[in-house]
Structure formats: C-alpha cells, structure tokens
Image (cartoon, rainbow, N blue to C red; front, side, top):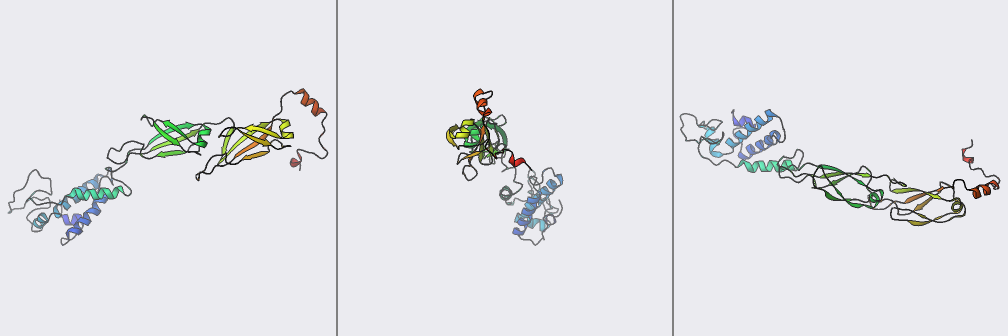
Length: 299
C-alpha cells in the first residue's frame, strides 16, 4: 500500500479528527452500496479503509511516522516487534487499540438511509402488486375487499369511497419483507371498476338516463329512480321533453375533501311499440301554431 496520508488526502500533521473526516467523506463516496458493480471503486474503498485503520491508532501511526512499520503495518528492519500473523493488513505489528471502525460504518449507513441511495442494510423490502375489481356502487361508497399479492396470502384492504378506475392504492408495509432488516415493502393495488348497465361517472357526478312514459312527460308525476344509495322518488315536471335533466344533490361520488357530487338524471321519453290507441290519438292531434321542434337546426 502506498503512503496512507496520500491515500486519504491529508498532511502528515493532520489531526485525528481531520483524518476521520477525510475517511468518512471517501468512504461514503466509494462504498459498494453507493457504487455497485464498480470494481475500481471497491478496490479504492478497501485501500482508504486500510489507510484509516493504520492512521486512526496513535501507536501504529507513530511507528509508521518513525519508519518502524510500513504502510501495511509490517515491521521494518532493524526493528523486531512481534506481530500477529493472523491479523488482517493494517492490524499487524505491536498490539495497539485500533478505533472500532464498525461505529464509523454505523454512522455512514444511518446517514445513507436518511437520503438517496440507502444502504442495503436498511433498504426496504420489495413492493408487491395486485389488482382488484369492484362494482360501480363499491367504487362510489367504498368497500372492504380481499386481494392476493403475487402468490402471497390474501390480505384485506379498504377501497376508499370515490376511487376511480385505474387508481393505484398504496398499502404501507404490506409488501415483501426486507432481506436486510429494513421495513417491509408496500402493496400496490390497481383498482378496476366494472361497467354498470345504467350508471356512469363524470368527475364527482353520477349520470343516469331514466326512461319515462309520454304521459309522465306531458302531465308530470312522481317516478322511482335508482341511485347508488338505493331507489328514490323523483318528480317529473309536466311538459318535460327527452333530454330534460333533474339533479339529486349529494347522490354522487365523494371527492378528496369527502364532499359528494350529485346524480344527474336525464329524462328519456320511451314510447311503447305498436300502440293502436296512441297512434289513433296522434292521428287526430295537431301541433300548436308556431311549434317547430327543429327550429334550432334551421339556418
């Protein structure tokens, strides 16, 4: 190993704290967790670690400065200190107390876990994905459902009221366990909403086309209409044409603030096929003077 002072980029007069700061900076840059699959960075990391081990022990540093040991911690002639052959490089030579480098690594890993590039030792488990299909009513009102995640055991989830088709629900800590002791990953559940035969969503509002008879449209009356909360009675104003709209306040889907939209009912006049009585009546009926249902389409 070359000069440990040069490896750490410090002067020979550097204090112990300056040496420690220099090593911390280099170790964070070169650690294999920060630069995976970089062999040169890994070799450099090992080199700066050996240099730090040598210079962080006062006795070993003093012997190196006096020329009694080399950069690997081996004794130089004519000095004959007994060394420990089983000790790793940087710890051979006279028995001196090296600073416990594990404490330094603990700090480094903690810092990395708090920012980008978290250490594998604290990395969370993998996220797991799943998909669930709910009814239109469940998407508006919310529901409890069970879902399986990539072969894992089923879990119960809460589908929030107002969820939209394709929305992804994130369940914290419901994913795979971390192999490094970190927190579990998350479960990512994509929600699909079954198409409804007559309801449809527009933002917070629920829309419905409601068939009415010609008599109900002409004379008005009370009819039953479905909502996601159950059927309700609505009043059809007399003289309603197809396309006329009624609004039921608070019968739509909730938004992020919890406030529900409305249900918009579009009246659609439905005529019975082949009704002789209706045909006979209309044969003798004449529209009032000046009435033109297509007047808006004329140039």
